[in-house]
Structure formats: C-alpha cells, structure tokens
Image 1: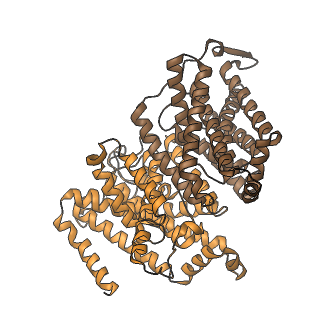
Image 2 (image 1 turned 60 degrees about the horizontal axis):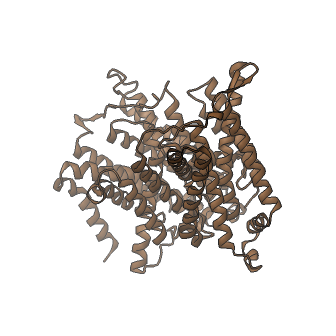
Image 3 (image 1 turned 180 degrees about the vertical axis):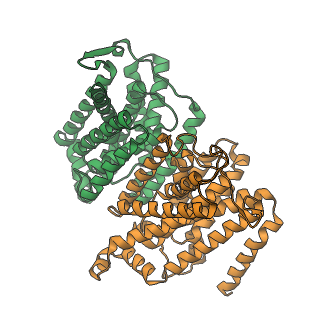
Length: 286
Length: 329
C-alpha cells in the first residue's frame, strides 16, 4: 500500500514534468505541424543555462527565467533561420531538427562534459510535507505539480482568451486565410516556436532541480514527449495532460513493481492507443 | 556506355580491393561501410518503394544482434554456446524479421511524419528496455567477447573472410531488393506508396502489404545486425541508442532515400567522415561534423548524393525509383 501510494505520487510528479515538456512540443506541432525532434536538446540547453545562471547569481527564479529565455531564443533562431522556409515540408523540417539535435548534444558535451550537475535549491523548497501512510513527501515535488497546473491554466487562457491565442487557433485551421487577413503569420509562428521552446527550457530547469542534468537526458525527454503526444493526441493540450499522467504513472508504477521490464508498460499504452485511436486520445486527423 | 560495363567494373573493384588495401581499409572502412549500408538499405527499401519511414531499423538489427549474442559463446558464458552457430544465426534472423513485423503492425497505424514519430518512440523504448533489463539482456553492459564462428577452418573474424562475407551479404540483399520491387509484391508496395486509396479499391490489402514490407526490411536489418555483432564482437544498449538510431537515418539521407544504392554510398561517406573527422575537427567533435554534413544535405539536396548526381547529369528518373521521396511522405 505504501509502495503503491509512493509510486502514484512519484508518477504524478513525473507526469507534471512530462506535461510541461510535452506542452511545448504539442503547441509547436499544433500551430505549425513541425515535429520538433530537437525538443530534448532544448530541454538540455534550458537546464544547463539555468544551472549557469544559478551558479552566477545564486537565485533560483533567475535560473528559471534564464533557462526559459535561453531556450526560447535558440528555438526562435532555429525556426526563423532553418524551419520557416520549409513550411509544409514536414519531413524535411523533422530531419533538420534531428541534425540540430546531434550538433547540440555534441556541443553541450564539449562545453559541460559528461558529469551530471546538481542544483542548489532555495531553502524554502527543502524538507518534506507531512502525508498519511508515506509519512512525508518532498515539498519541491509538490511545487512541481503546482507549476504544471499553472502552465496548463496559463496556456489555456493564452490560447482561448487572448487575441494572440485567437491568431494561433486560426493559424492551426487555415494559415493562408490568416495571412490574407493581414496577420504576420511567420512572426506568429516564430513566437509560438519560442513559447514552446521557453516551456521546455523552463521544464529543463525545474526537472534538473528535482533530478539532475546529464548528457542523454535530451533523448529521455524527447522520448517522453513523443509518447505523451502520441498517446494524448498531437497538438492537443488536454491530450498532453492525459498522456503525461498515463505515461508518468505507468513509468513509476512499473519501476516499483517490475523494474527490469517497466518500460514495456509505456509501450503497451502507446500501442493500445494507436490501435484504438490512431490520432491519440484527444487528437484529430491533420 | 552500357550500364553493364560500369557494374562489372564496380564488382571487380570491390572484389580486388581487399588485396590492395591494408587491414584498416578492409575492415574498418570497407566491411563496416557494408554492414552499416545493409542496415540503411532496410530503411531505404521502406522509404523508396513503400513511402514509409522507420526509425526502428537499428533497433531491429539490435534485436537480431542480441538474440545471436544470447545463443553464442560470450565472455559471461564461460565459452559455452547455447546453440551451434548456424542455428543461432537462424534464430537471430528470425527474431529480427519478427521484430520487423511487430514494429510494422504498430507503425502502419500511422503514416508520414507520424510514422517517423511512432517508430522513433518504439526504437527508444527498445533501447531503454535493453538498458534496464539485467536478467536476459545484461543491462548496461550488454554482451562482450562474442565468439565469431569458423567456417571450414577459416575464422570469419579475419579481415579478408569478414570483408567477403559482408560483400556477399550486401550484394545478395541488394539483389533481393531489386528483384522484389519488380515482382507483383513490389509493384503493389509502390502502388500503395503512390495512392493507397486506389490500391485498396482495387482489392489489395494495404496494411498487410505494408507489414510485409516491414518484414522484408526486418530481415535485411537482421542480417546487418548479425554482421554488426561480429564486427564489434559484442552488443550493448549503446549499439541501439539514439545516436546509433539516428546514424542509420543519416547514412540513408546522405546517400539518398530514393534508391537502394544510396544506402551504401551514404554508408561509405559516413564511415569515411567518422574515421577522418579527427584530422578535420579533432578527435572528439566528429558528431558535430556529421550533424553539420547531414544538415547541409537535408537543406541542399533532400534526395541525397544519388539525387544530386542524377540532377547534375540531368537524367530522367527511373520509373521504378522513388524519386523525391520527401514529397511523398
């Protein structure tokens, strides 16, 4: 019972992190049909930049801002210089982001080495919150769940209740018509790409503060984003939340009960969803 | 000039080559390029004729490699093999083909960029499975010191025998692909690539043919996996990790996804870059160079070097060729 509860709590925490990462991925896909396979690299860039900022300034909020901003700038540059001109050629865009992810992984390895880094968290996040049965749960993980909920609400408000959000949704449905109405679609696209990159950079700082930063994490978060959006449905925000919950819980419960085969559980979920709804639980044909 | 003269020249060059070159050029360049080329061929077959892209070909090759390693003598088995080597190779190729079929069943639920995503996810799940499974797959360490069989008193490990083994396998598999795309099965596959709806209306079972294409690709990749295991003398999760997975794509894209010969041209270029990047960018940064070359190819010539060559010569594309596959996917 204690094991199950602990695995569930850890699963929800992991789901919170996966959701923030995947929300950026799904936002970018929803607006531009770009499958950004450099998403994991942006996670790692955000994490390392956040670590540098924290080491220089000693401030965790500044580290969060630095990681998000740095990843956003890199993301916008990628979109502006390399992806926008191939709008509609989705395979080529995916290949370009793969090439970028190889280069980024290698350059980050050159700059930061193969060691793993740990974050110094602010005092208030240390310690644990009293809980029944499991006796205590780290406060930072609770904060992480709160952050994911805040990201969900923030994105929902942005997409549903602002003028910018109206443009994004219009762009999803008919890019050319939106352009004909006088909206600068390439600019909106670059901004959306930047927002998606900022989210994953932010997740990089948060994730490496609760876990650690090391080479190879880029692949891990790319995989989680892929599986989450395949399960939840590409381009859907509620889908990303549902997918993240399913995959986060499956991973942690699997690790607790059958550690040498736990990844199979994620695989089974993915296959079951593909068999039942090829576009994901909340997805619709493009 | 008749194309047969060119082919005869190429064949004799490949046969004579190991007698003129050093062991490094025979094994680390020649044989390895063919091993990599075979695995990339399985991807090129799917893209050029099936219009399907699979990121799971290295994982499929790895499944065959792991199967062979389990049944062979290796450093943790005290010199004992579970099966005689011809049987073990048979099991490995069967496992690889079956893996191809299973991945195909999952993959053909989606198409285009979605298929790339789902096969990439499957490939990475297989990598993490190999890494976390300590009971059968030996976790992080994998298998090392795998015995390479002897055939009629000759160790297949020697540079010359291994080179000719790889050459024979590559030539036979290449011929298999060229044969398959001319028989009815291959024509149906290409019909599905061009218009799945019409093929379905004509009464063909689209998904079954696509899964069969994945089975063929799985078989090709499995042969590559067996040779790769012997080349490296072992296998570990890193052999099917994200870098290895993406390398197969890089090889196929550099050579060109539109024709099976692209797989081998790409493999040769890739292996040369890998070996000589040290002189260009230092010993550690060759991945940056490879990523950069890949980017330039994707941007400048999405159908790779074979496509570039074809456009420079201005020849019409072969009616059986995939052409610019990237537009089809």
